[in-house]
Length: 208
Image (cartoon, rainbow, N blue to C red):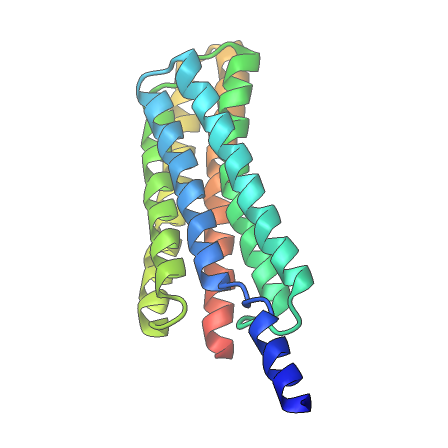
């Protein structure tokens, strides 16, 4: 009698969430948001900008789902704090994609070739982070290699940022300098978040 009840209880126990799949899903939405930013920088439209905002909200929802599962789950395959940090850092990248668009609208500026160049590198970073999340469960060596590439891309964005600011000063238009420097700054900060995410991934694989 007791064994039957125990068996019935085990059958009804809810299935543990797959945190690796949740991370992959979130990283893919973040990549889509950054890709939409690239498309906007190449051909700015109202619809294109709105799409970035829509994807930023989807990224927020993906982060909330993962955090909710962390709070509901007693044992997680990755340290709980690391999971939270990784999810939050990924979300920051999507946030910066939208902040860039929003400030372009506020300052009434059009994305230029410098914005596009930096956004394209950010898209590479986001794609690398997707790959890291896909390999995280079963291929730690591949994650380590991809992390190195992502971190090199952060340096590339930083160089593009300084080149872009120097080009602004060459023009001598103070209003343009102030407005575009703010936009370039958002893109550079986004690369910092991509770099920070890579560092968190590196910390995680060291602990396995």
